[in-house]
Length: 291
Image (cartoon, rainbow, N blue to C red; front, side, top):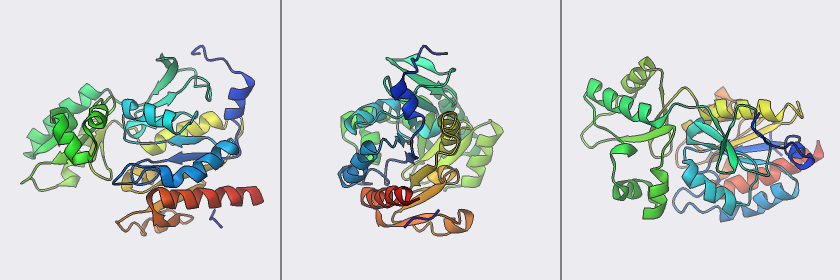
């Protein structure tokens, strides 16, 4: 048991998308996707159960729109998805209708929440010079370097480099991490730094939690009581877990058990990655059926 106007037509099916029994918001790498292989096969049973029960599964990731669009289609999902740590929300045609201030994009819509990428890359270079640190963002990397750091094949690395609202970066060899100084320099520029599973990320004041809050308000126009399930595995996901009615920390190689003091109703899975995701979601859907 688990603890606790854009021209979009509003047809009956779409209204149903806004009134489900619950909504699942999930991180990808290390959560729904295996940290090393990027496979989601172990989570397939629970994903299929979500489709059967018409439960929206909203992907929430630091990944780019170029990366997430084919993955979203491969998984057969119709719910909106959040790109680049809350930089924007993408709504696909035929899924839930977007809010009125979303903009048309490739047959769907994009709800922009973050700062433009060129402003972020410029700011990161300024911060590096100011602090005398070697901060190397994706914008300075060749595809081979991105592929090496992410473990992605070349084509997937090309998609990962197509940033719009978030600049992933690493500290170059020989640079000593001074996270507080980097965060302060970002804050002075109206930006923020978050820590992901592999990279630091420089972005606007958006984050996963704020994107989830906004989407929840959108869904709750039709059903004010619809519960939110959020699953993640790293500090980059904590703001999202704090929003959830049912927060789930998917176990990883790092110990984040201290988060239970901050989120008392937090569930920590026994298994890592998509296996842990699958067990948690199946259990949750069974619990909600009993309520």
